[in-house]
Amino acid sequence: MRITVVCVGKIKEKFYTQAVDEYSKRLSRYCKLDIVELPDEKTPDNASDVVNEQIKNKEGERILSAIKDDAYVCALAIEGKMLDSVELSEKIDRLGIDGTSNITFVIGGSLGLADAVLKRADYKLSFSKMTFPHQLMRVILLEQIYRAYRIMKNEPYHK
Image (tube, rainbow, N blue to C red):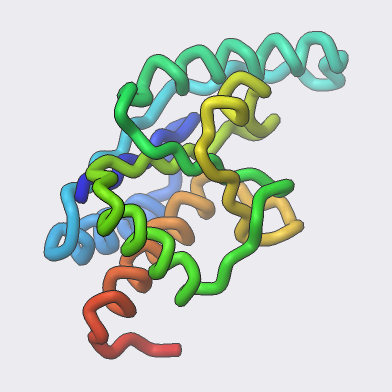
């Protein structure tokens, strides 16, 4: 299985980078992992709704160009469906059984995802009704994918 994480913005803090590296290393036993970092647009202070929408659309175009045609796209969105770790594991496992070999998770920038990206998504996943920094969300997502594989393989992992 190929797992791709398409994300807007670079990680600046060393501790996030270390966590991403650690989970990437752990996941290498289970899947081929690609992380695609796309540049974010500068958002002016007090930007109007129109400007914010233009920024989301620019980022959305970059995201869509990074998604392979055959990918099953899972967009991280507050309005998505919340799953527990076992359900996420079952979802990834079921996709593999059904013949999906490429899952792409999408993490938007600070303004969220453009409508075009949400329309392209095969599934919308929410981790919480709260908003998280996209750098932290990358770590949380990778940890949950790692946990999902441990669950699939019936391997121990702390609860």
